[in-house]
Length: 381
Image 1 (cartoon, rainbow, N blue to C red):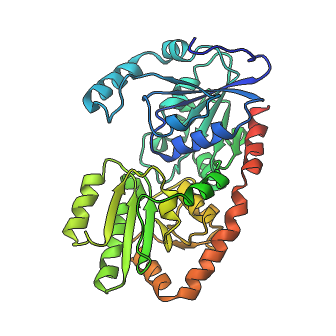
Image 2: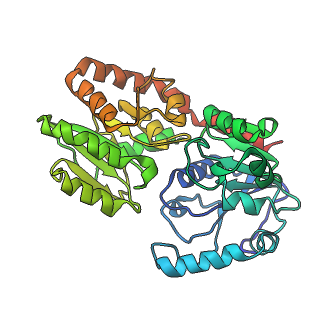
């Protein structure tokens, strides 16, 4: 046992199993959900494969936390992957018994890959797979499965929770688990975001410029290469424009080289990890989501909460969050699509202000209490 339970008989015991609690949309969604669930109703544990991580440090004090591996990829990349391959080579039944055991009423796999595979080995708990993917566009292993292979892969899952209606529709069109599927939007802590946006920023944006902000892990999925390419002709047309990209990831060096090659060092800024991105986002003229695919997009939600006009590629999550273009601009996935949208808002201040007003109106969609109640309908069954 890694913690002492004093009143577990009064509260439902819930486990969230995830790969890490570092920078990522699934990790942030996990943090915001567990921190907002009632500690009077639920005895919550988070088990993470990798140690530490930004969001691990922000877990509420009432949440039990267990870390499995002694190092993460940032500590010692080769050693981490050797340990991970060894860990994942252990038979799942044995691994579940050693790491999780039959201690919980509900086990939730935070992600469709290994977290979902291991929680399916529970003998006593209700097993929930939390789906954060667009199966039509995600290039990972599970979306490549046929319907029959998917049915076998998920055969011991009792219930699926998808982060948007379109995410659920695509998932079930492919794998056919309609009767087991529920939609629960990610919890977005509105007041926390608003308060952090008022704090002193690490970076002040030039008010004389048209400032574009984008946030996310620096991976191919997020399309920052497309966004950088879109900014080049805008700058060459002498538009007074700057782009700030917040986040770290494996594409940092490639994106940095792209910026230098295109001669954009004075206009495009890779800020890396920022402890409080909201105080920078709050200064933006526009937020751009350039993702190749998204099942929800927390950063689009966060921008709407702060009243920042949004331009987003047409992805599953943003389509729903922006209500098919009512609350922000939805565009294609080419750099020219982003370029044209940005130039349109630079030139049309009235349209920019209208999108700012619409973003502010959308804030009520993210009411925490309402979305927590949706999760409680799942957990209280």
